[in-house]
Amino acid sequence: MTETRDRLVQWLRDAHAMEEQAHTMLKGQLKRVEHYPELEARVRDHIEETRGQSETVAQCLEQLGESPSGMKDTGSKLLALGQSISGVFADDEVMNWALASHAFENLEVASYTVLVATAEAAGEEGIAEACRGILKQEEAMASWVKDNLRPLTVKYLTRDSADLPASR
Ligand code: MG
Ligand code: FE
Image (cartoon, rainbow, N blue to C red; front, side):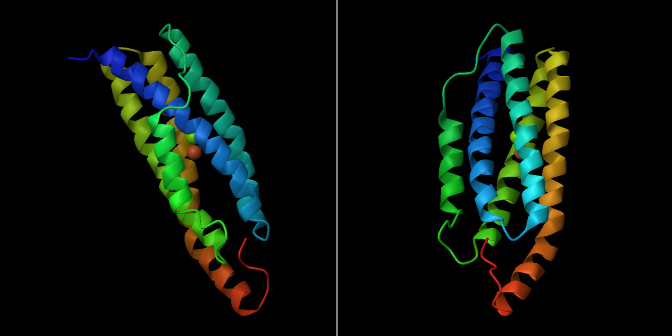
């Protein structure tokens, strides 16, 4: 048997590792969108948001008298996921960026949905509220990526068939 509070601590630590991984991925992604300024701007904004999320999750752990652990399983699994769909040397890098981002942001949405429910079950309303705030940012980023898949695809295909630099 595991206490709900212990699950909350465990999953907050996983979320912290996920945000650290997100930060690394987003910074790498900046190099893969150079001919797509609207993507670059949104990625830059989300890097800032991700920094704040990481701090907020660390504060939630501190409130519980705990601290973030080092890089954990979730982080390494996500790293593997990111690498497996990253296609760094492909001639359609920006499209790989789109697929990887859509997957990652939705994984974050799922993680914070679980954390909100867990914090509520543990009677930690302050932590639930903090996680709701992060969830909103992840949902906004996930829908932004989703909404941009069609226009991005069209722009990529147009540039590619006009022999303009299109890959990133
Ligand atoms: Mg995040
Ligand atoms: Fe995110």
